Length: 103
Image (tube, rainbow, N blue to C red; front, side):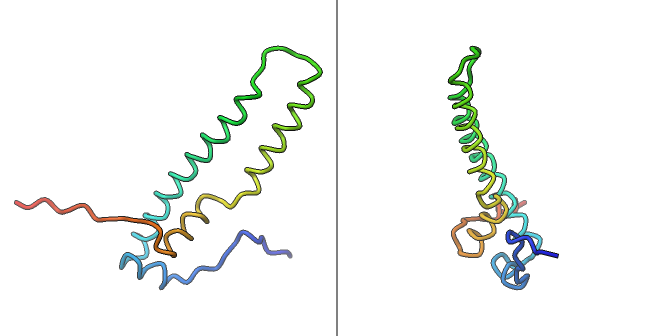
């Protein structure tokens, strides 16, 4: 059985020491992954919208090949969760805890 190369074993102690709590660290990375995913999706949609056409013609076959290549490029990119975790572990993310309201 082949192992998926995108699967990485992570040291949970290193992840939890960044914020002091494993679950909080994962939450921070997941919020960043949502940001990355959203921007990647917007970028991909913008690139693919250039090909939007209501007219059928011979150029459409060529455009479809370009669309496929663009889509394949995005499919090969690292997953947003992997990118976010790398940023988190490399101290490239800024996060803060909201102040508790004082009475």
